[in-house]
Image (cartoon, rainbow, N blue to C red; front, side, top):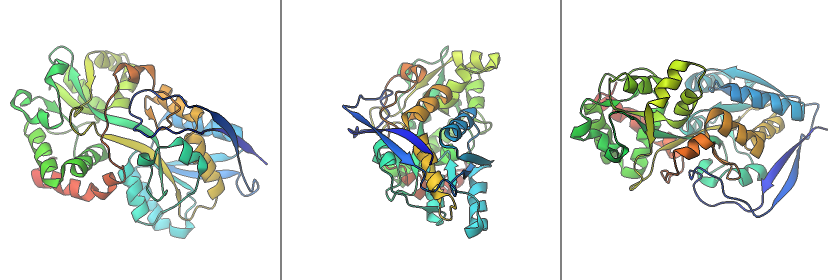
Length: 357
């Protein structure tokens, strides 16, 4: 019988994990998580929209420790959800992993996931980063921040998402399309904390100050800042981390010329989102699926997400990377991330109504 050794925190931190550093625990104990039926659980099939080498390295490590092979199917989150819906009870998928809480909420709403009971996840992941009914759990966190030109902008000029609509930023704001889930979840979070009317006002004034028609991915926004197309962009933190440590000298140069600013620190906090996972409703290897998710929440795996992929760990025992800590602590929006899914349709409606392409 195979076993994975996981470290379980006895004393949990009741707070957001966005401080950029973990708090020490008073005591730890070793808990052994067993594969109940090794013969039936020698494989786990994963559907994921993530495309990082870090993930594959962790899957390989999980296999080394447990003897359970991880078969990976990669596609966009919407495509994977549609595939799960189409396959129904015949699906081979055991785990759905996506880079957005809203998509996990959608999968739950479509009855594609099952609830789980796990002392490991209860210990390793704060409640606000999990589904209230335990259908999914966060595994990593990122913040959607303002990235600005070090040559042309002082951080003292920046404050909130809404302030990007002020006159000083007219024609200077860079951001990608509203069809992107990162922007949809940003707006969904603003609806959750500000209300629909106020949230629409915020994105409308940002739209009015755009330097160009929304285009490109997050990295392209930083490149456009350095190229002088605009002065400030909206981006996810881990993309800056990847650019700073890129093998492409051009990306490293771009990253060296921009700064990172956490908006709304005096108000509702910076928007955060997660990558997370849930066990599919018709999983044929549910024991192995849970072991994989528990492993990805462990100290060892969380350290890898933090150091190699520049994501914030969900596990309070694990510190953010030195790079992320160098950007400083920050206040995050205080909402349950299930709301990103609940308000997604409303966010898309608003974007369409105001004409954000």
